[in-house]
Image (cartoon, rainbow, N blue to C red; front, side):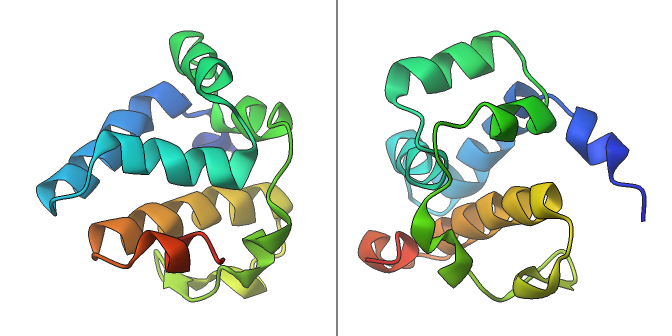
Amino acid sequence: MDNTRVYRMAFAGVYPHYIAKAEKKGRTKDEVDTVIRWLTGYDDAALRKQIENRVDFETFFAEAPQIHPNASKITGVICGYRIEEIQDKLMQQVRYLDKLVDELAKGRPMEKILRQ
């Protein structure tokens, strides 16, 4: 499967969709930012910079300070694929983020989303 198209998508182009999905279900932009920061290790300023620079997903994850050590605890199905079985590390990270936003939108408590 060729994932190049996904990798080349601007994170800033998808980010508003993450926010809209969460807000439609009563969650906030701050909560979306919290799960993104948890997963990637970006602080607020660095996250804003990535969005302003319109980096693609490949760059966004390559420049992430540190993928959270508990990210491997993110399991389940997203977009028809079982996350823990995805072999491509970058695609798995993209799906981790999708899953976290999905859980947020479904009303899951933040401490469970953040695998605490």
